[in-house]
Length: 311
Ligand SMILES: [Zn+2]
Image (cartoon, rainbow, N blue to C red; front, top):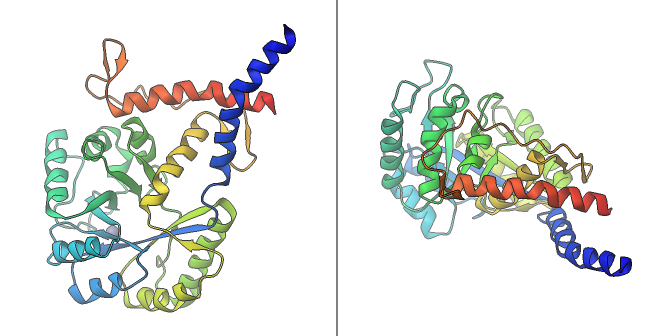
């Protein structure tokens, strides 16, 4: 009888353990590069599109070349992101039609919908600036509700360390990823080279890295010469990393550490009490994508705890 019990445990566990091991070994040494601020110049935009196809573009809405360049990118199979301008803490840094904290939730939703409608082939959304906006939960809720409704992913440019983007994205069931390195924060060859090497280090150590760059001449020159010489690392479209990173974040929420590959038994998910949305449950059944995601997260800690106990 005792033996039978342990066998049935064994059988129940095998798939979970296998799934976990598969996830740990997935996506080794992958680098996603996103070129931001595309849309002002046709010539510069075409130069960006000539980079390897895995290099993705983030298009500023309502710029003169946004539609043409996005359509071209879509036609050649590149990932296109809506690069949504969000309010910065620096007042002078303001692109056209920037979303601000003064706007109502409805205003934000209308603007994001209009921006999405204006650009063909959008697979995800990233933020242009946004050091103020991305800290604000109600405003990010409004933004994320639209992204969720369109079935898109979110790339957090991380213009502030206090960003709540990943947390709010998860609450809406939006696959989300975050920028690891800005390539050309300092527009000088040596600094660009160092930033690129830093991104490669992260990719080869952790399995993936996300690099954001801008269409400056010096940056494009660097990428045009450096990318063909890449050896170990594989260039991938940013959309291919969204699912795996969401999984990664889910593990962190339930206290699972990628680096030690061991559960810490800390079973306390983030506190979502400040995040509100309408009708997350209908008759006690999760109804929105966010509440479904939360339900899965609530179920997961036990599974992870059991796996680590098994080890
Ligand atoms: Zn930008």
